[in-house]
Image 1 (cartoon, helix red, strand yellow):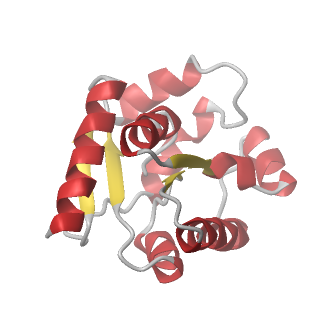
Image 2: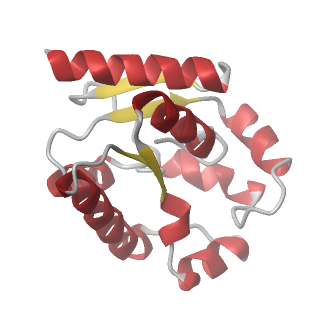
Length: 163
């Protein structure tokens, strides 16, 4: 979880690979209206995200019920969004990919073919409620190499399941 440009998709792939899970790419479940809104440079609000989060919760719950190991790449910027996902899958863990506004801006401005424009980075940080103190949450420096982040996250999750 984290703001646009923090590396959710790539780190999610690394975690899924290391943990023999599979990636659920949250962006793939946005309705067309959300994509159009973001593409036009308008940030999503809670109402825009509500149905999307419901769908992601359903996807996670379905995967868990099928005995799979899902890894969701999703911004989950607010506590209420994370709580909605936790309601769908109790004991859900979150890896917060933390980085500065400047690094996020730089990364998004050089990302080809994505609907999220760099102009929305400020709105992402305005919405962000860092998961400080939340149960089953790991905060990592998102400027580290992808493989390092994937390894840290997978090892943390494996250790958290044993305690």
